[in-house]
Length: 150
Image (tube, rainbow, N blue to C red; front, side, top):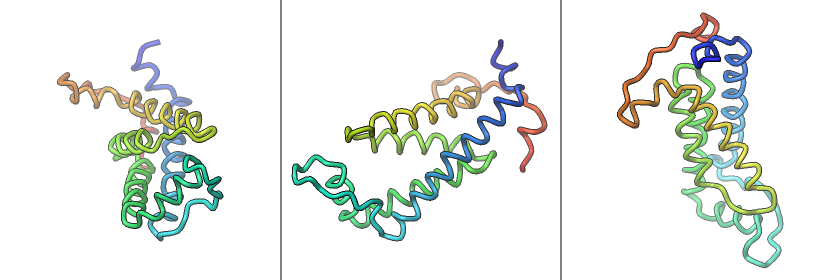
């Protein structure tokens, strides 16, 4: 099956759209807590200095940086919730996910899966991303459903 045939698959189009909604909505939800200046979690620090509770408390105590991360997540999430600006949203999403990956319990699994989803979204728009590596953009058509503003 060719890339163009995959782009015409209604099931794949809906999967990409709903994936954008899912990760975009999760980022918007997580960002609001940070923007308000609240703690993301109340996990207790075990005193070892390497726990997830210690990490989140340190990030929370950074103040303005905590809110900046929230604003970046909000912008990325809102862009992902659109169809027109989903590519810049996916680029921002992947860059944020890469920078917040730490080894706490199951965190590498969770952020690894989130990174794979972000890479999938970027792969979907590879025809437009080709210009980043100095290749010409390729026009690909999709169905009227995918082009719809709704």
